[in-house]
Length: 244
Image (cartoon, rainbow, N blue to C red; front, side, top):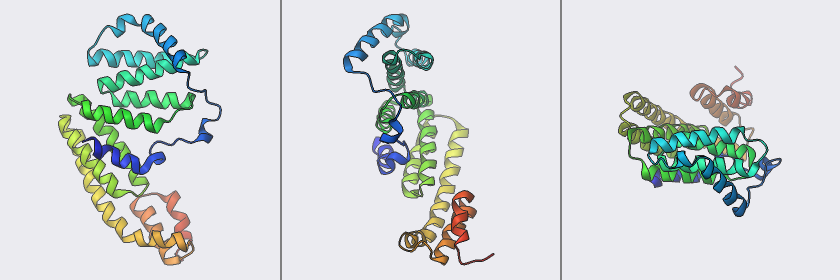
């Protein structure tokens, strides 16, 4: 199942998980391996009773505790990084994708890391190890959110593949409401893809002739009236062939 998940992510790359050198300005460097090892030893000693508990639920509880501690830590970047890292890894082991994503996002706000690689790894591991209905629910929710980002980027084929995975995961989650939402969005997506096919040539034409009136009108109508993206669509309509 993991190839269905990672394929669309590789296609979008920075669209899904933005990361650039310019965004790293003002962020702390990742601590060295020796610095991380020293901080890890202290943290595991401090939370040794929590680490001794091995069930998935215990790991998730500890991950959330470490995440909260990391956010509160202001004066020790080594400890802060390891706290985020441990929270991420515990979530990966326990299948809590949503909390793991939060840990990566918080880490990326403070340290010069590659969040895309971390999130891809987290999703791949969670996909391989998912067992419980709650595991599959988390994966389905994440995949549905990623599909929406693919839709924003007009990559409907990749979005449809991702939604197919989300539907299967939603069914295994035993959450009827989630499964219904996933199925409904899949039907909407098929209709959206069909409508996009009609304006794809117009969009390609604008790459070589940005002022072409008919193509601008077609793309503008699609963005405004189909995707409800008025901010993105109005500039096209303004250059379109319909004065009204």
